[in-house]
Amino acid sequence: MTKNIYDQKVEEFMAKIKAKNPGEQEFHQAVHEVAESLIPFIEENPQYKEAKVLERIAEPERIIIFRVPWQDDKGNIQVNRGFRIEMNSAIGPYKGGLRFHPTVNLGILKFLAFEQVFKNSLTTLPLGGGKGGSDFDPKGKSDNEVMHFCQSFMTELYRHIGPNTDVPAGDIGVGGREIGYLFGQYKRLKNEFTGVLTGKAPNWGGSLIRPEATGYGATYMAEEMMKTKGDSFKGKTVAVSGSGNVAQFATQKVTELGGKVVTLSDSSGFIYDPNGIDKEKLDYVMYLKNIKRGRIKEYAEKYGVEYIEGERPWSVNCDVALPSATQNEINEEEAKTLVGNGCFVVSEGANMPCTPEAMHIFQENRVLYGPGKAANAGGVAVSGLEMTQNSMRLPWNRNEVDERLHRIMKSIHETCVKFGKRDDGTIDYVKGSNIGGFVKVADSMIAQGTV
Ligand code: NDP
Image (cartoon, rainbow, N blue to C red):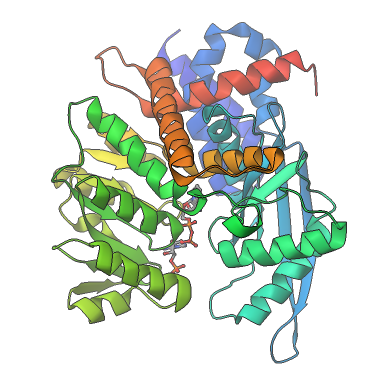
């Protein structure tokens, strides 16, 4: 079959997805990218076609939408909307983060839940896929307001989740503080202490290395990709976007491996520090973002470096880019600029940070491009390890968890190589991760009948 016939089949499939899920652009984008890899594979493996696996995998098993009323510090009643997308439970309980951000809507959470199914399968752990969150904006809210919101959110969500059913974690706007308030309310409502959420603090059931896991994992993935060219982080200049959980720990691991991180950003702009963000400066970023909850601009003021308002960091010279903020944060022009400036590795700490056009630029130029569902799977992998430790009621030490994380990232890389080798010997990590993630879920769905 020629490529054109595949393209036509992708378009036909997408037309149905768009008709059924109108206006959900990010969901369409995520499904399209996967369908491009999977439809040729499914044509060659008719068991998946007959069982309509792709059609079923793109339809959530269940969606829960609910009202979240809460009272702010001035005594005013506020109303937000809560969501949980239970996407696929073929290989384990639903698993995926909660996002609190004003842009949250059904389409964004469906894209994230869809990606999560493949990502979780790649980790080798028994984890289904889900995602949830709210249009609540934690920015500028007091701890008390965040707590009241989290308690109200959990007062509905607790009916739908459980350690063997659905195990949420953090994402944008949901860190250790929020997980604590959510867990406290769940425990109070159910009167049981179980591993119903991951990202907990180590004192009350959390895993060591969970906060570090996504950033470390994206860095390990970049390292594995570079190894295929006999290269490493030693002496490399690295552009990181974001300054939250993923960006902070990616910066830490890159520095440990001998690279130099020169940028960080937030939604207001980015800082450029050509001397590199060393340990002392990173400690300051962690204080600034996790405790003071300030803006990245303050880094530039403190260290006397450049701050570029309203821009993203992709114009700087770098060898490696680790986009670690949000979806669609690298567009076609920015991808061209990165390639033109010598960037040869992109490992996605964030979910879907590249537009489809940007992704194609990287693929055409044979950039070592690790898509989020492979590159940022370290977070959910250690969440899976947190669930294991909760079930055993035994904690592992830092080394044990980090070694397991490292092994999982290497195995994800191997899966991508297995399913993504191009005729010219290079690796298409997009195809590799899509097919590699799909096969286990698809075979399990077929084995479980038409469910
Ligand atoms: P955080 O909330 O800790 O940090 C998010 C960072 O991204 C902040 O610096 C924030 O800036 C910036 N950001 C958020 N939205 C936008 C936007 N619309 N435009 C520009 N910048 C933005 O989140 P995480 O670090 O946890 O998550 C970052 C990415 O990694 C997300 O795509 C998430 O889905 C993905 N991810 C996270 C995992 C985890 O374990 N935490 C696991 C796998 C993927 P500001 O403060 O100004 O909003």
